[in-house]
Length: 136
Image (cartoon, rainbow, N blue to C red; front, side, top):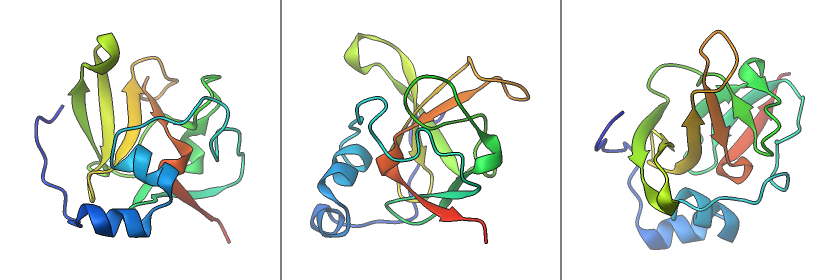
């Protein structure tokens, strides 16, 4: 886990607010969370690539998506090493591992060690933190 990683994309708070919807801003820039079973993509089975809603960077592919039953889109690995960064998160009275976009620093969700093979990881990601590009 990283302590500090400097994202490549830098924008002012005003620029982020102009670019993102209020829900995207709350999640990506303020580390918010959408309610379970309400966000986009939690039950999608469509094939394609999930991108960061903040900067467009590729994050996950549908081949790594699985139904974890948690109410958020879940993946067992990012699209490539270094696509996301991990940070220790001790908010809300628990210790978890926060996941952010490595390119813009946007909060995506958390990763847990209870996923399927081959990684055993469950990247539990807010749907509003992503956009989707279907396979053609």
